Image (cartoon, rainbow, N blue to C red; front, side, top):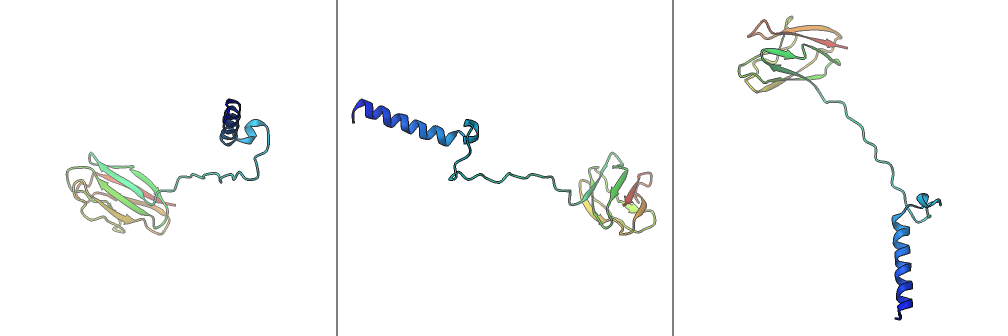
Length: 131
């Protein structure tokens, strides 16, 4: 193969490589029929599977939690002592949550406002609002 032919082959190979790398729309033309476009990737955030109450420094965080009827509520105790999350009317209770442990309950199915406290440390209070 002579130098002219080698140069022509190299130029053709380079042209094909550029055509494959640069979208036709960028060159002002329509995409070739053989080029498939991929569907757009859809990303969305999923709603959390549950609500969370954190017990830390002898306080419930948040002190007022809004949930859906029957929603699962995970209660995480980050203190080094046992706590509970107990409804003042006795409707729900986690029982004893060990230090650095967690328990879960279900929110009442009836919409309304429910007050709770720690049965061990009764100064700790909070509210669940079911909407």
